[in-house]
Length: 327
Image (cartoon, rainbow, N blue to C red; front, side, top):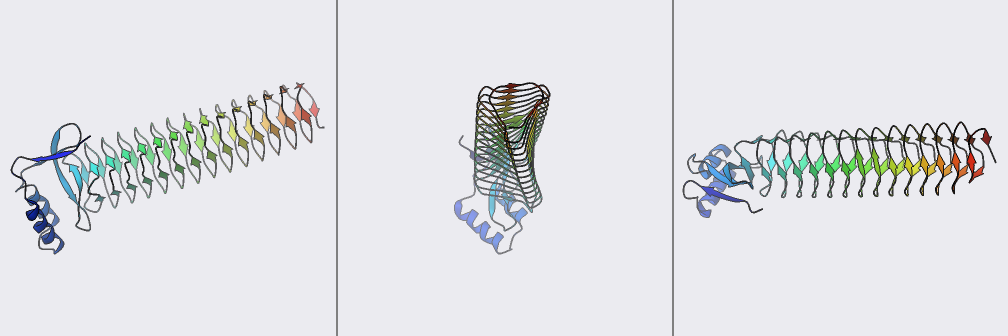
């Protein structure tokens, strides 16, 4: 998209603009007078933000430098900074000490405020909000009703949208997406091509990466990791130092915690519990009210279900539906 400017009257020459800029820098004219004169005695300046020319002006930054274009329908505080190549338009608002830099765009009814920064080629739009000391950069986009705040960082080609919240020291990057009421907070990281959505929560020092998906009220927290093509959903919890990877599924009301790992094509669901240093892998299933813990290994085509317990140093590659297997 090529952006262009046009005047109802003949534009000021470059020499005149430089003179006005010197006067502004030297304090001989106010920023308001500078803007008025650049706009040719109050006549509206037009700029094309992509859908045809609209009345606009260049923002004068707190350091008196001439900033980027701002539509007259938008609002940018005098204390805010807009880089010379950045754009703010539609009904967007940039308040407080916020900074919009590089080729960033803020539009729609989006708001950027506090000490937040948006730079690179990032886009903030719809009714999204970025505030606190949050940064959005690269080719990232924050849209819908999403909020990014605290010291959160969104970068790369990440997308945060819907009613998602990313806050604290959280990082969302790569091609990751957080959306549909999901929350990512604390020191959590969501990256790669991971997806977190539909009321899921990732927090603490948790990591969700690769092509993993966490959704539908699931929670990943502590120092847990969910990676590969694995999926955690339903009301499942993965926490502590637990790891879920490969093509594994953890769902229902299942819990995987401690230093347990679930990987391969394994499935853990129902009210199952996997904890301690237990391993569930290959094509094994643990379901219903079964527990696997200690140093136990459940693998191959095993199925542990009902009220069965597998613990100690047990190795199970067969069906267990009741009782306890300890070795």
